[in-house]
Length: 452
Image (cartoon, rainbow, N blue to C red; front, side, top):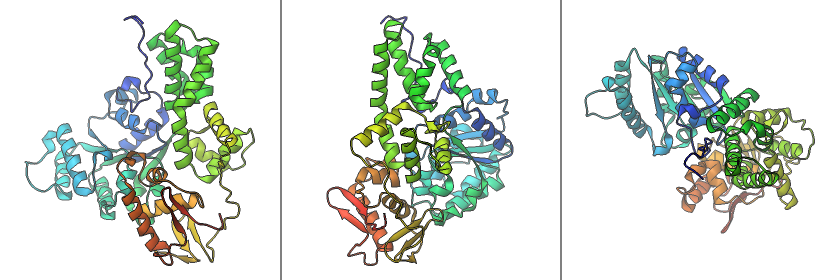
């Protein structure tokens, strides 16, 4: 390797912060900028690794404003990362004020005094005629944190009306799906227009290949077909496939048949953990059944499931987006794993015996009686156990489903046990002799459901 060797331009290790490395998403960006012109808010929905954080970073850049002829001089963009340990409104307001002090020091008040709603409103008043655009990444973490009461979300709605504060949030599900029944009726969620981040369009994919080829000097367009077959048009997987092709090309300025085989194997190794997590945590039974049908080359009649998978980027033109995902599913079947639980016998309504969850309405029924609304974490735990009825759910699956994968190292067994105990208090006829939520010592928990 010489000093003149081209640099690998492909990046899949985290969010893109350099606007020169951001590609695509033209339709979604146009919607967001149109909303900002009208003081409107946008909810961006996308799977893990779909580029949600990169999109928020790009929104605040001069490059984005120039590309969309957007006059941002009256706006102050502030990015808030909920992973920084905000456990309630007070910490949220302090973090926001610290960020605002860097962006608009002229609007800040003199030091001292409690950082609360009134102080934030005073800063927003001083900020006029400029307006705040609040970029809230992984907003479900705030929704899921028990320290944020309903009044907090009502306040956010209030400042959107009184001070034209705009919100751009990112979540993996729609805001209504992220919220329990207690919060789903919050007036805040009514102000958002939803946009989905799935796969690149064909034009965006081809532009990405052409532009990165120019930058690195590698003939990536020559391998465009192989890259698309392997990675589809899902940005993260495209970056990964391109990176592998580039490294092989950089070694001897060409791609041999042996290189193609090695690249496919390396891609399968790299993507397997992502596919495992996706399969165990982020797909419902109907989506799994649709993917299994497509993996076997069978048409899928479930149009809603196909539409949902298309929004998520896992299906493109009614086919699985990646040959590697198809191979992954077929391999799991050959190993004897049951990919889709048989729910054909599950009743369509409350039963005289057992737990039944109406996920459309968020209602829970036990032995034919509707129970009082659960907390957000209790409901998410129950839905995860319900979707995997009679199967053992281990700690890692529970943490990912209830808190998210970012909390794997933070949520310990006692915290899970405490949440299970609270859930039993709400749904078990006799919490001390649990009939439905069973502890499998040393392995996890399962929901006993004779109808599943």
